[in-house]
Amino acid sequence: MANLKNNQIVDDSHLFKCSVLSTPERLLLGPGPSNADPDVLKALARPPVGHLDPFYIDLMGEVQQLLRYAWQTNNRLTLPMSGTGSAAMEATIANSVEAGDTFLVAIKGYFGHRLADMAERYQANVVSIEKPWGEAFSLEEIEAALIKNKPAIFAMVHAETSTGVCQPMEGIGELCHKHNCLLLLDTVTSLGGVPLFIDKWNVDLAYSCSQKGLSCPPGLGPFTMSSLAEEKISKRKGKVPNWYLDVSLLNKYWGSDRVYHHTAPVNMNFGIRESLRLLSQEGLGAAWDRHRLNAERLWSGLERLGLELHVEPDLRLPTLTTVRIPEGVDGKAFTLHLLEKYGIEIGGGLGSLAGKVWRIGLMGYNSKSENVDRILNLLESELPSFRQNVAFAA
Ligand SMILES: Cc1ncc(COP(=O)(O)O)c(C=O)c1O
Image (cartoon, rainbow, N blue to C red; front, side):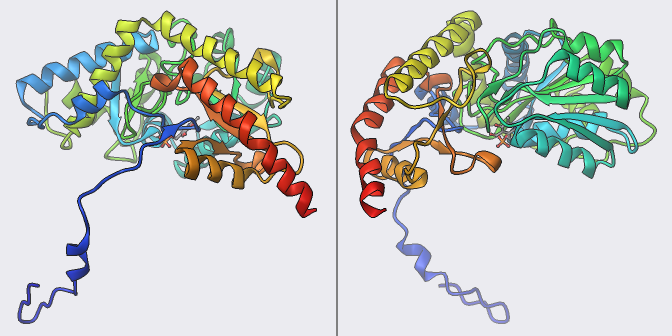
């Protein structure tokens, strides 16, 4: 143990007892992260290169091009933020919101509240419309709120991970532009798994994550912005109040200047490049179909077992299913049992759905029929004893 004269190092001898890291095998069928594709893990394990290495500069361009494909957009400003989905979420807000802007948020779950919280921190005048958790907004409800509040930005979550609802998007972007406002969309649980058309839907700002439909570990937050949003930002009176997430600075690195901004997490970008390559190899349409087919297999299997789905069929999200915990069953004890005995993770409910639903994710690499059958078989074999335990205890 080192012992410097006036600067004694605290006792760190216990650290030497740590063994080499070994991690448990898990099948992640919860709200995310999902398991990473083994090819993505191989890409992540490549030796790093410098963040201004010509090889890396080329790779950055490929990541941007592949992200544009995954999002179906031609937006120039499309790049992965260094950070998780929340960093990219904050980037959309930090860049587009100016103090005093009216920021209308349609809240129908946990992540709508996070959008409102973030916008408030950037001194927006935040107003919200709300729906019960498990429902979606109609065009009429959205238009009425746009007319009443005249927002500069309208924000909503496409795929609400807390409820399992996929918001129908047709017509919302047109309404926003008709009423002179930008559309900001959370696509964290939709990118790669659910039909998503940034340009066709007139979305101005969107963000996502690496760890769900893209089959990569958490660590990057894809971000995209339309020319209309760029125009609003170019008219800002002051600087973007967040240095790290300022897209005009970031674009000097991701655009043609290649000026250092921050040391890019190069290995994460190796990983996302591989995950996006795999997505493009499969084809976006094929990936969306696979997610839907496996989700439908899960939904019908759950119903066959007598379990109740929380969301009505038309609004169900293929990447994330909410299933009601049967009366009398301790939902937490059951998820713990699946994890400890079988190494399988499913999620519990959040917010107003805490203790009421389980959340089963079939995202990216994990959207496979064998995973669906595995969880259905376990629900069939293991759940009865949990019902009985509760009945005996009562
Ligand atoms: C819909 C939605 N938005 C935002 C986030 C935040 O992303 P992250 O946890 O990667 O920061 C999540 C995380 O699961 C999410 O599901």
